Length: 377
Image 1 (cartoon, rainbow, N blue to C red):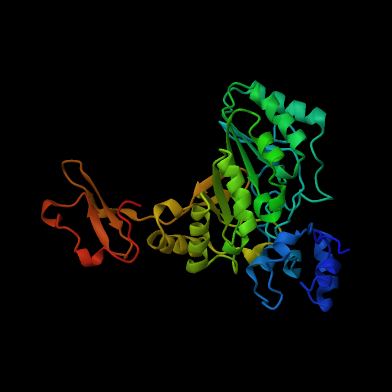
Image 2 (cartoon, rainbow, N blue to C red; image 1 turned 180 degrees about the vertical axis):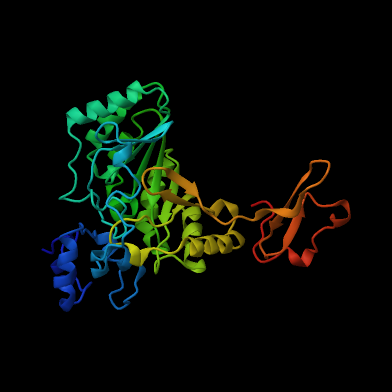
């Protein structure tokens, strides 16, 4: 009897499945000794071993370049620890907190900003006593409107344990929204079960699931079915992606990814600029490249498929939108009467003054309203 496929957790197992070369095993063992490796069957099946630039492999197969740490990189690039009042809680923004019950995942991304904290050798799962302390902190801070479950991946917890925490949150009146950040629907789609869905809904709060996926190939039939189970149960879904060199940093791939989300009833939410996690420089683009890509995306796909391009500032200052701007003051911005004028760039790169002078208020010629412009986007 053939045993079912298992999650690949070492260079030797990756080699046995034909995903890495024999001569690379020793170097990849050195990477795995520093940063956790796990590639579940659903994602391993997507990798094309014949393609040295396969975008799925680039996300999940270890690379010797991970042992090269740039001077600006750090173990806690977005300052989680500096914003942690009690273990398991990150309180960076006034009205919401992160709740990190676990520090393990079904798959370990090679660009993970918490790579120094997660994995079998990472930080431990929150104990029952520490969960109580985390919930007491949330209960004691009435400004907290939303609790965001992250980690690690919260959806790998047994439904019973997750449901118990959510039932406790149900008793905290000022918390109105719970959100889960996860890769489970793409990494282990069979884990989206009726029991898990019931647990997710057990708080009685508005509940959202945010799916992390970076390439359209990740949205397999099984992944889309898993997402449909959540959505059909009344749980809205959003997406978050990371802009990654060699994975999704081209117009065609990024547009296809965002359209795939929308077709699966998942609203694109964030496109993250790569964080300064150790050993990830080979996967980061420049901000200028990301802005140029977002500018091209704006003219290519509808507003429904537009994520917000964000940079998580090092040290804990939080996320800021860093997408391209189309607006700038004119040379003579302020007239004597006090009216401010701006130069606005359209999707074809033409500039317009806003508000326009009366003599300039001519309609745009019909033949120019093309190239993917969506007046109601």
